Image (cartoon, rainbow over all chains, first blue to last red; front, side, top):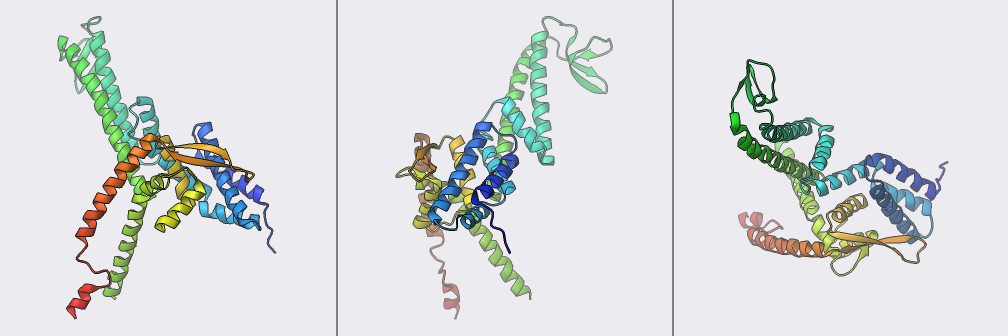
Length: 197
Length: 132
């Protein structure tokens, strides 16, 4: 004997699973997605007339599991955002999410952090140079190079007053270059997702 | 045995290519379905089926529509259709209309080139006929 679940219960259960599976997303967009699908299922049921429970079950099956449908939504959202934004905090968020899924994402995230960090470092050093001329610069501090403020003796500063023009040129260029590179990587990843759909 | 396996591999590769081609053109097909007037989700599916014989999975359509909305290519509006539940109608935005026009032009040019490129091939196996 099979027990037929009320269509309303089936729909609510499915949408609840989907809400959870969609993960972090603006609440308004999540509600919109759920309303879309609720409307779709109800439309199918209205078409069918009789045996609404069966039609609800069939429609839910046609939509796929809540997890796979949520994954499709997340992929498509990423495609919409990837490459379209130049805002560092959005790029950081998108790349961080990517980093959680695998090695490539992790490397992209490191590239983003390194590029922005170096770009900001050059710019700040250039701006600080007039105020701390003997302590700010690019230092040969064997076995490494250090960009920033050093107060201990023994390190050799390489750029001198060139720190200002070099920092103010390289800093913004590094930030712009990093943004472009990460946008390209995200677009490439989005294209791969599109092929995998 | 090798011939059989090669034949299976060939067939699978062909199916995969066919599926990729359909997926790649799905965005244009969805945008084109909205060209004449706003449609709701189920109507888009029916239009794709009736005009182009395209069977699109319901779980594929809605995430794409959501992306097209975020991209600003379509807008959406809930309307009370008098059916007891609201329907969400999708409309091409001006940007979406311009993009669809460009995509359709590219598609037409590309398909014309491909038609020329494959014009020598008889899909019913003309090569075999010539050989015999």
